[in-house]
Length: 119
View 1 (cartoon, rainbow, N blue to C red):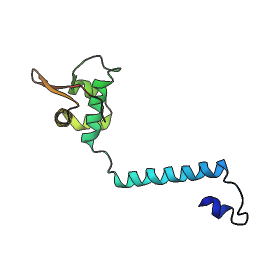
View 2: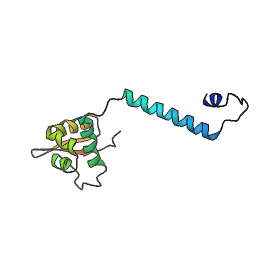
View 3: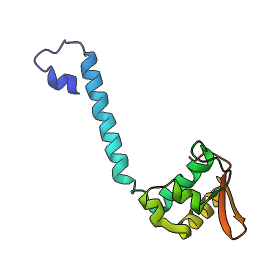
View 4: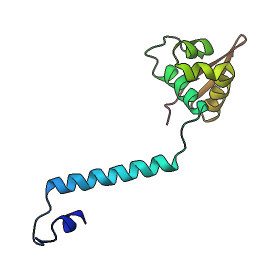
């Protein structure tokens, strides 16, 4: 459609690669904005779940198999620390319920071990 509009005075003109690239970029932008509009922002719970799972699954920053609140807090940013130990407990319970890992109790401390990649 862009080609027809941009070349209305020259109807036999070939569609250029630049027009295809520009049109593709426009469509990609529209799709991205539509997804953003319909997808609510991440909650602190989702952020905490991703953080804890990432620490356990990727395990390049942390060398412990079980991720506790202390490890999550020490390796987290301000929103993670603000979520607190209760937030961690809820996050690892949700990860366990979704089958992405195990919610364990080590003494009095809740811990998490990822068993599947985060979707």
